[in-house]
Length: 300
Image (tube, rainbow, N blue to C red; front, side):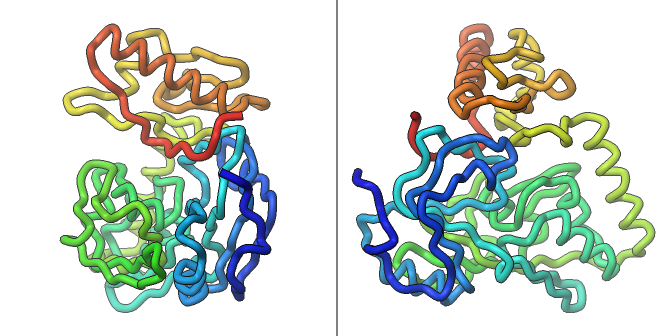
């Protein structure tokens, strides 16, 4: 399709950025540009944009880019990135209301400081609340579905929805909410706990992450979901994937379900390496690995 320009887009209170390089917004630090990047001023601004924009204009939403690979040819249409106005966290009793752009780790810390237990697992998830809602993010014995009270989302027509847990259709690392719904906010509920015990649990989670995951590298987190009855890292290891490279892309030697950009990897290097190992696992074990990293855009 032809390139989208700002001239054909509706007036907004937020910001439009033409030809925005998306590599700066992903943890891999690679990939192409978007035709237009839109940073809405608030939920109403987002809703009015979606209501007014032509249905022919592709719309893609990204979060903090912790599990995102943008292909080298970039993304056609409008890419929406929720910023500061969507990053607020509020405490009300044992409930935590968080904007979709709030970092999971920050939500865990604020809950802990308020003596709310049950959200500690979020401390070990390198992403934002919007992504946690979409993927039913989980780690260290907890999942998003376990603590969710309700979520808010805006659909492609600009209609704002309030979704209860039963509306989410949660399963392992996925939900049944339509792909064109953009999450804007969530309310979680924990239970009363002692702050020092909560802090100790979060410190233990972080120590385990640092010991077992390459968290200081340019990575996208877990590359593949665990197939039923298997662990992805064991399958990758069994076909010689640990330490395997394509260009500057590499499967981590510390945790081989993590892909790393060693410096100048292209998105194609990273995706090619992942697909090569997927094929090797399928050939040897008859098990299909499914990407947990979200891949968007066009190849160069």
